[in-house]
Image (tube, rainbow, N blue to C red):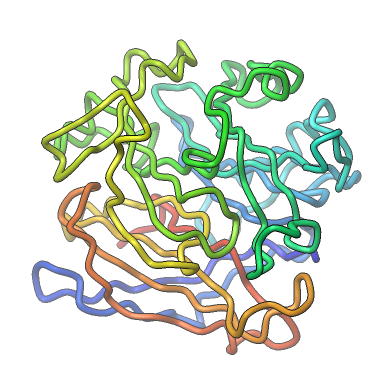
Length: 331
């Protein structure tokens, strides 16, 4: 199933703090019908433009690939134009699998201090995931890649990531960055000027069970070493280098799909949108409905509080999945 890239205006309602409601402005929908692919998470780069990976499609290019990288431009959201940058051919054609029966996907992406980053992971589609009764797409063996030339080339290589993943297994198998704004933001709150934060569920594209929080010193991020990351072991005050001791910051069994939380400066709060399908899938990928669940928090480690939900039933003839919040275009 391939999706058209789109952006919907989201309004967070708050008298002060906390956020008490989230509504979709259906008059503000922006669709790119000339694009094709899944799970876009546009990030705001230092040149003021938006860039995004798309998975399992052609993006704005011509060939269907497991991954592709695109530029959306730096105009307002009603005039953005998609441009293909890199077809990421080393990660294979669309649906191309290796011996592990998995394909490559990008789970999260960001620009930090002029360098582009993306988490890549191995994924087994729900129709092939015989061990999961909920028919969830598993996400595992993730690694971090970077580009110093605006997406034209990337390191580490796909071969390195396949042979020696930075995070073997599922516990950090679906990481997404916490977005703070242009070029990684200049936010002192929660030490975001010194640290880069990321969250991951327990290894599913759709319907993960809980989220953990990780961070790394911003100056060490370019070194691409998993050993430099630490994991929240409780309340933002305790951090550990042992990922098995990480404490979930949010637990919602089978309701926490891939996500990348976003800091909302005007509200001084964090907003997270996750998603799940209902009812339980009986055929891949044919959900009856997709639900987006919004949570807000004063810190990336929480406490995360449920705000409200939206259904994708306003979309005619299809479903929208893998929603993310863009750091640009906030007002």
